[in-house]
Length: 75
Image (cartoon, rainbow, N blue to C red; front, side, top):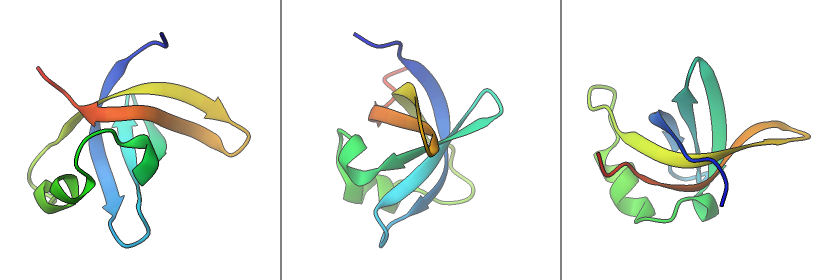
């Protein structure tokens, strides 16, 4: 099992089906397929005021930092 870290949803692009998670001063890209919970609910709950905490497995790709196996934090 990969290392799991927590971060905050920084930005989501509902129609393009991807978003970014901020964690320790870095932004991690994630695609809808990386998100294990309900994508539509995540999009609905996201706004500029509410902080949404997400758990994910950080990886590095040739395009940059990426979050895999993303889900809502339980804590």
